[in-house]
Length: 90
Image (cartoon, rainbow, N blue to C red; front, side):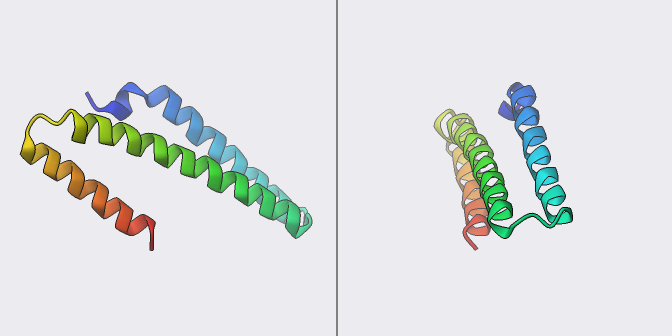
């Protein structure tokens, strides 16, 4: 069973909150709210997304690297993380 399956309820709740935050950004833009207010909303979204990313990454490291079945599984998990990090820092 995947670690994301074990944490499914908590992760989906975080995604739902992110969705709500994005809807707030949309409403603020539609209402032509001041740019400072919109920037604050965007910063909140970014923080929430970073937190979710960090949680899934931490779980991935613990499950697939630290507790890997063997060296081949560990190497594969590290490669997955490397690919994600390359994409993330672009």
